[in-house]
Amino acid sequence: MNTLPVDRALAIYGTIANRSEPKGTRERLSQHLWKVFVEGEHDPHRLTVHGLTYLIANATARRQGIARGGRWLALLGVPLFSQ
Image 1: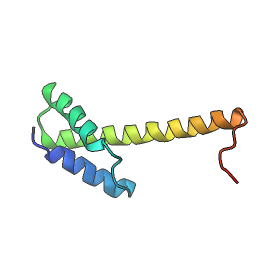
Image 2: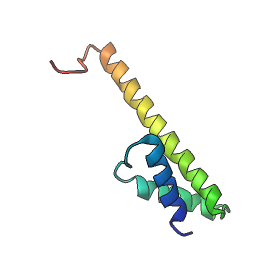
Image 3: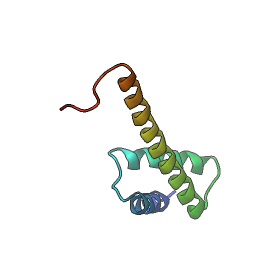
């Protein structure tokens, strides 16, 4: 598999999300798409879609984890912002 689907997915996601990729994203995305490739998906367009799905799912999980952590800190009485 060449890196074209990885590059495409990162470029499209960067445009949609209006931010650059976090450190290590390219490597994790490459590993994920390699796994999908080995499992039999060889179409570069479909691999790009798999890559976008992976990036969006990870971003959503990170946001939910941060929000969930913030609620727990508030419930424990830990101030979220220093004054």
